[in-house]
Image 1 (spheres, rainbow, N blue to C red):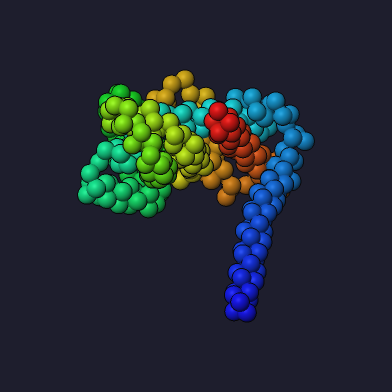
Image 2: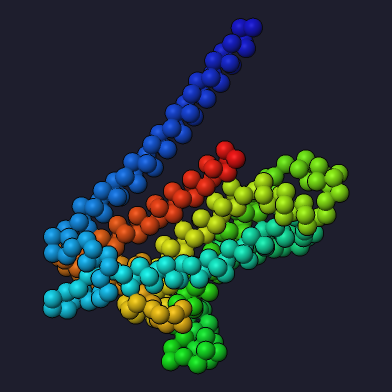
Length: 298
């Protein structure tokens, strides 16, 4: 008895310390995000002393070094949305289907090979993928669609889809594997085929994890800079099709931040673009969170 009590007390103290460390880590992450947003506001809101909010958001011209300068981010927003939607249309179906195949259908040996290959794909630097897309995919797009340049929104969408797929496949596969085996056994006992069990039971039960995988994959697409800057053509114009060059919000910040004067209007406008990106990302995550809560209540 005398040996057990100190052991129990020590375990409780250890658990208390771990809980407090985890709590502090969570609070710290929230504080860091808030401080980043406040810093963006401090540096970016200065541009609105010279440019109206609607003129900034709905302006069709981005000429920051003209006289007078024009700070309209609408072409950049449309370019980012176009490339992101194109990448999502490619990566989400292929990623989810690949995760279902690896988790539910593939033999053990093939599953191990595919998982190792996916992890290797995720380790490739984005600048390498961008260079490959610029050198190989760009000329193919140019030849197939008879364009003047192959650096278009479609090229960016395919390149970013290739980058997002490893994240989607890996996390979705973990979510599918985590579905209790009893679900599969109950479906088989009721006479369901393997496809019916996989699609209607397992995939349905793994929806929250699969949605999280999709959101993380799209988060990489939205935040990607180097690859998209190399393959989309960097034309700050409103595109009328996915076969035209575009420029994204992230590529604009990366390409122009080194040419600005600190404290100038151009400098503030780039931070304002950061605010727009922050708001877009926050809105997407908020919508996904609402969907997850609705699914859980359902």
